Each structure stands twice: as C-alpha cells, then as structure tokens.
Image (cartoon, rainbow, N blue to C red; front, side, top):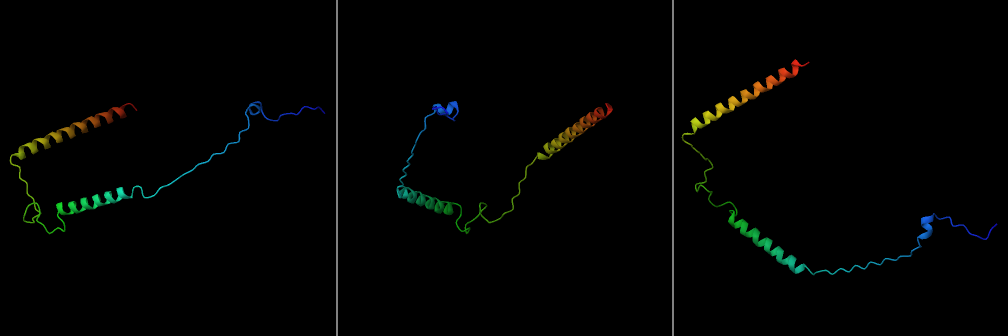
Length: 113
C-alpha cells in the first residue's frame, strides 16, 4: 500500500470548502401601536352607516319619490309609431338578407362535394 490517501469527492467538490453557517433570526412584535387608528376608523364607519340610514329613508316610513306611494308608471311617446315601424321593417330586411346569404353559402358548400 502507498502512503497517499485518495479523495473520493468529485473535482468540483474538492475545491468547495466546507462551510459552517449559523443563521439567527430575531423577531420582535409590539402590540397596540395601531389600536388608536383602528378605533378612529371604526367610529368613521359607524358615522357613515348612520348618515346612510338617514339619507336613504331610515325605516321606510317616508314618502316615495312620486309622493303618493304609487308604483305604477306610464310613459307615452307621441310620434314614435312611424319610427318604430321603420325600424321593424329594417330589421326584417336585414334578417332576410342574412338568411339568403346563409342559404347561398350552404348551397356552395354542398355543390363542391
């Protein structure tokens, strides 16, 4: 036997020195720093809720927007009949054109087979 010792590590491992690291993490917590801010924010939320309650009618005992409590609404637009008729005819013509185009495309697709 020879006096030489054989290093079984790979070449890369032979050049990387062994490291002994110790990591220490210190965490300190302080409570109560934001309790004043939370109290103020809570008070603002409560005040806004009370204001919204008052503005939007409270318990519902107030009058409605119409003043008499009626919920029926009637809207009449004079002279709209001719415009509606013209729009209906235009929609009908457009639908017919789309139908004709689809029929033509289907015939062309089936003629090639």
